[in-house]
Length: 173
Image 1 (cartoon, rainbow, N blue to C red):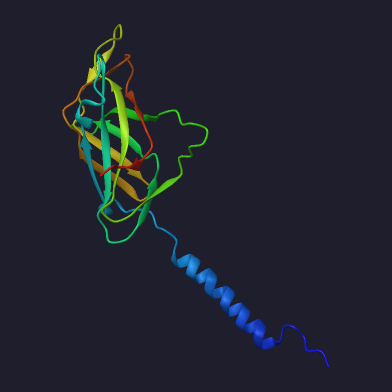
Image 2: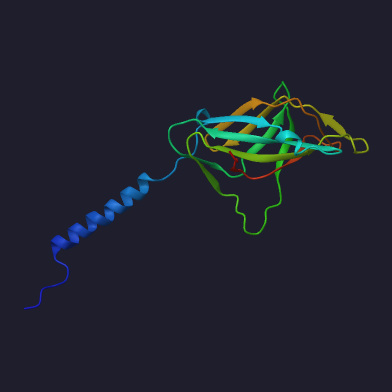
């Protein structure tokens, strides 16, 4: 007599195992970072961004929580004055065809950074220059505001100005 390959008991075990795999995968989903999880500051790059009429900085992120969390690879950055008026907005730097913005997974206490480049001299006819004192980074679960170092950004006579912003990358140690 030939026994069937799947008995009700083996089907039940298989269903439990498959269900267990899905539960384990669901457990590994990385949640978005909460604003309270993130530490943000700026670094000058020791002059690496400075030129004749341009400047820049690294915006540096760290996950200060005990678990991994996700942030957009290209967070929205706005620079504001003391009255919370937006003075400049980041625009994405051109990405190569193999780069995808997506998300970055921040392990606890690992440093990630994104470049920011801007025009720092009044090289535009009828242009304007601003000196923001605060940066606001927008994330899915809320904004993070932080002091912006004393820098001048210039551009055409339009409000707000723009600066070029690169995607997050793991910071060298």
